[in-house]
Length: 399
Picture 1 (cartoon, one colour):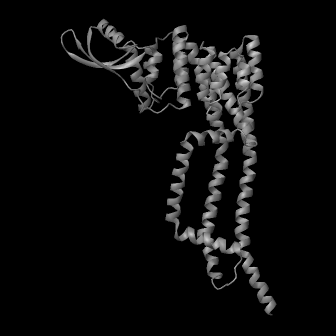
Picture 2 (tube, rainbow, N blue to C red):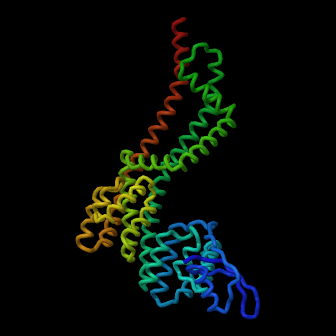
Picture 3 (cartoon, rainbow, N blue to C red):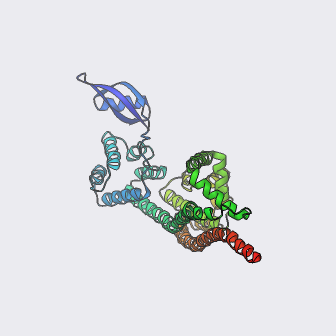
């Protein structure tokens, strides 16, 4: 099904324009004819690419409210109208909800209406809703999606909260160093003005201070240039692939990231599989939620192996970047016929492990940041005091 922008005439000769989902133009012609419209022209409509993807928290709230209302027997259009009219709904969200309602009133399916909103709703939600429409369990799938996005939001929020303190420490270190180099060191520069033979460390500190004070516009320009170059490089496929591969091999951090990647994929695969999607389709969708290009590119080979008759657990076990026990859990799920539940249990367990790993990482980062700050400040102090003590030794020798 595609969305078309059409121009048509009514029976009384009035020209109307609108949007309609149809398999092709012939199907569009028949659909409009049923409404008393005669097609004049049509073209495929582009998806709404100006809409930013909804945050995970919004997706979770939307799915839970929708599932609750549908379970209570409220019709779909009425449920969406209630959600769109809530006070805390932002204008951008309301515009998307109104667009969905318009498409539903024109006869589009709910999943097609979601897909027509461009990047607002992820492919995972669109595919699961499409399967739910076919199975008649839209309320159950909505609640499953709500649980999925709530747990994803909780884990993501946990990572952000855990990294707040180290980031604050990092900013403090940078500010302290800037203050020392731009205000404190210049006070000693006058003292060392007549000293002929300064130690290398002292000359280095004075040079850095002079550059920061007198050439800071050039430094800011260079910093901006470096940021642009780095962002450009990180956006290229080879660099992003190499960087994501390196992430899985960093001591301590790599293990934590593997746990997060595995938990994210296991939860997504569980939701898709439980909704009735074929396992190959679920793998193709689930790989895009991992957040690591290096792991994602290995799925083509895994899917090929499954199509050739290999078990899911063996195919997933060949992927580098997941925790080792993941394939064993999948094997148990295949043997017991409860793959979706085993994947969900694995995701919950890995979420817990990821939270503990994040806490350990933050516990390790805090003293490291303090030590780095102490080393930098200590080096500056020693560089300043070294020529002063040298002067005292020279005066003592003269006496």
